[in-house]
Image 1: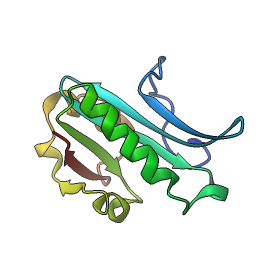
Image 2: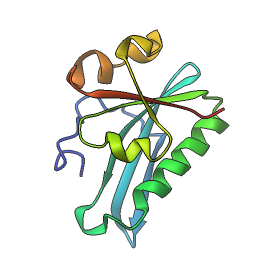
Image 3: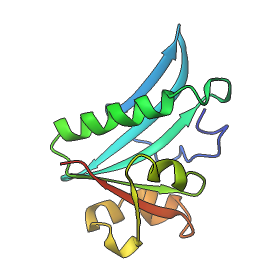
Length: 127
């Protein structure tokens, strides 16, 4: 699903402990991931199968990810997007400058090499 939507997969962690999926039967119809950097989170890899969009699946996954992040002691979640800033603004994320991102998150492969510098950076405080 990630490859089909043009999302990076080459830097995914070997353990996907903080990734959530939405299932329909035995089929994965949605996925979202959280990478942890100290008390910060990096939301990544949100994708919903094209036949299941506009059914609030993404909203449910993001809400669950935010709850999981809070339970892990994460204070803020950051993300990079080229295609969905309006969607995430509707979920309470705010556009910020790359320089406002904490150093541990800036050192992630997502920030340092995988996503282009043209990607929009967003943040949501969750605690």
